Image (cartoon, rainbow, N blue to C red; front, side, top):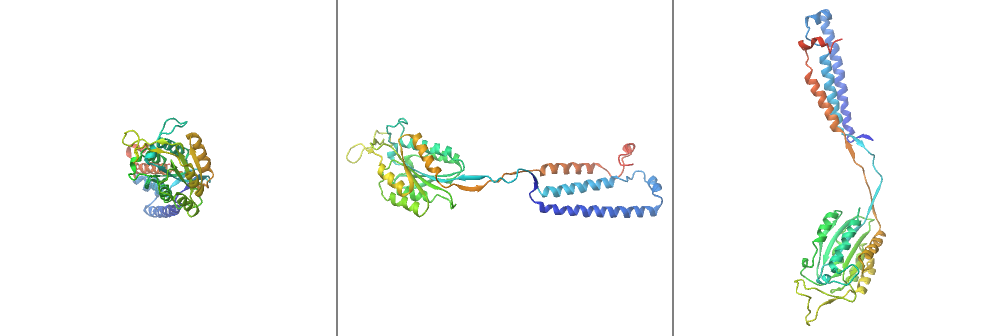
Length: 343
């Protein structure tokens, strides 16, 4: 489909027509004045080097250059017409627990990986499944902060995901309520789009108020809260971040971290989402994707681009201008025999 991006400039072609009329009237007057000197044939013999056609050819070449420049201003384009395809997507903010308990290794079918490593694998594969969606990252322990504002730049999302570690937050503990409230602030103001908060935690909420925060996020702000409980209800020993075996509590006992599935389920239910126990990464991944597919998808029109053609028009205008410069008003004595501009 051919079109002009700025067709209003085509009105300037009137200038080309006006110049052509002026040229025609001027040429007629010149012929009348020439007859006053004598017989036109005799006058031509007296001025053998004066060309009858060269000035006209040069004029029309310049007229062509001017017309092409005006066409360039109108930006000729060639391409497909506007596409009416729809683009769908959701907004998801993933809150990852980075407390020291996430370093624990549970016996699972995925192998001996820490809870943190398994959480990163789930998020990484989820990012790979996203196409027209937006994603944000929040990390939390005793505090919560935004690691990555919501974006459609999945390359940056994976880069920030790989840098997540328990050392990011000094205030240890697990404040799920703070994670939900911080995640709620990440979303855009778009309406009619599913907005999901995905909390990945081992379920040891030390601060409380998680259920209330999830209920508020869902009822008042329109967010759906999903909780991925990662770890084992039987518990696992928590490694010392300094590499000195396992952590010891005040009683001199090794710290055991157990998944609190009941609390995770209550938070998800209050948030209008779903609780998923990450016992097997592949199974949990499938369940999460099925849950997110039920959310409302945003729609926006996609427009195809048109290819600019002004470059070709500019080249033609440049060639005509060069040709006009090469043509002299008077005949070249050495080329008179060619008689290019004589009948």
